[in-house]
Length: 298
Image 1 (cartoon, rainbow, N blue to C red):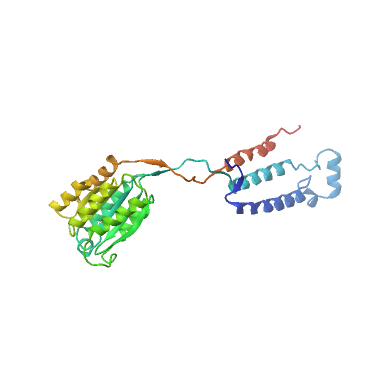
Image 2: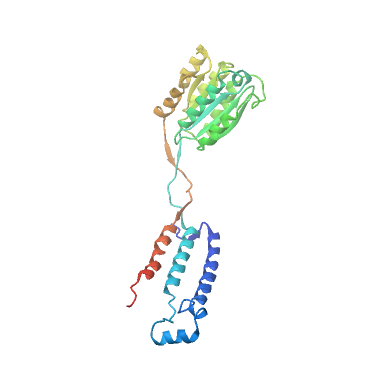
């Protein structure tokens, strides 16, 4: 473990010279008679001093205590931290890839907003699982690689429109091929692929890719924009997933949460953590303040 001290916000240290200058200025202006030497006649002050009514001794303790506490607070704000490289980190081996038909027949459909809503519900149900997105039309593209930033994933889905995929047509096999590559490259052991489709383009090629996904340990589920067809049912059965109706977003969320196959693996590389110990400096700042509460001689 490396205990070398590092400052996370070092610019706060620029306040220390200002505090030092302020302290010196206050000390120079501090008089034993509280500035009365500039307002009262000198002979009157000497007479009162002879009677013991004027304290001429400078007491710097309150000033030192106040400035010392302020300096410690500044040090706390500068973010003193120690580095930790021994923290164990894990990654989830159960990812989810959303493969969405972004062809004109789907994006211009009256059900497109319902599809986006269902997709966002499914994204919200990912929890700790990484998610990715593939868009396809006449060709397929990776819109978002596997990530745990689910907010970005949802925002990407909201931006999809009729002009997002320039290639006309509908080739779900190309989208499933990209999804299989994403899961394979991320070394996902038990993933889910969710295909949003109106059934166009489903055939022998997409069935072949469904079989390839199953061989990787992934399940293929379909969200149907239309009434279920035998082709859709065949894909869901071969992929080990479910055929989900567009009108029931909760069904997708339940499938992803209740049937999740979370698998965690310790990362081969350590994560870098910083432990901010500024709170300790805040506690130390209370110590000089105790000087302000010391008992004065009668």
